[in-house]
Amino acid sequence: DTGVSQNPRHKITKRGQNVTFRCDPISEHNRLYWYRQTLGQGPEFLTYFQNEAQLEKSRLLSDRFSAERPKGSFSTLEIQRTEQGDSAMYLCASSSQTYEQYFGPGTRLTVT
Amino acid sequence: AQSVSQHNHHVILSEAASLELGCNYSYGGTVNLFWYVQYPGQHLQLLLKYFSGDPLVKGIKGFEAEFIKSKFSFNLRKPSVQWSDTAEYFCAVNRGRNAGNMLTFGGGTRLMVKP
Image (cartoon, rainbow over all chains, first blue to last red):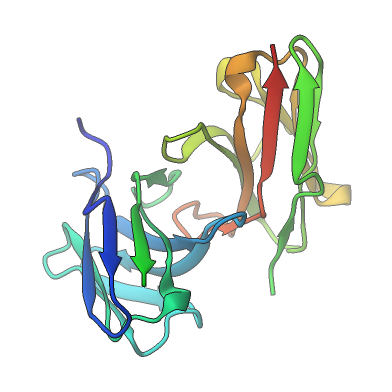
């Protein structure tokens, strides 16, 4: 399968814990995006990378959130000191420079 | 701020009925427009896209959409729906000539097709 993959698919954590998600984009894609989707809403942009450079961050991305793409391939999204409001589906997408974004299956986070 | 509005949150149709889902956006510059579909239990998939040229674009599974610049709209249509079209549909926009930019999504329309 050469699509976007995300791990884990589901994560349940207690409030205050840190969590980290991983995204592996389509191999030839240099752009990688993170979105968050809550129930009944469309995805909301969080951040994106071109190669290893983080070029844009949404105001939704509080100081507790950090994303990296160290070698311009896979990316990680870490949430520190999770809150119940962080419960959502976290989506990763990738694209080449000028074409459409392809989405992964998402990581569903539940904060109890 | 740029926004995308989908007017119908839930639509219920019988098989063979025609479908039109509305999408309006607020950005006045050059835009690229997309419709994504999310079938139950599956991830977002691209249904169709508009970058430039013919404002009537055709996508997969018999779907089409028309870009009307004067109305800031990009409505999705299908002449005859099938039960398998039951899904959630999202309109999305990104700005500029480079389609590799962040997407702004509408709130989605949940379509249920009754057999």
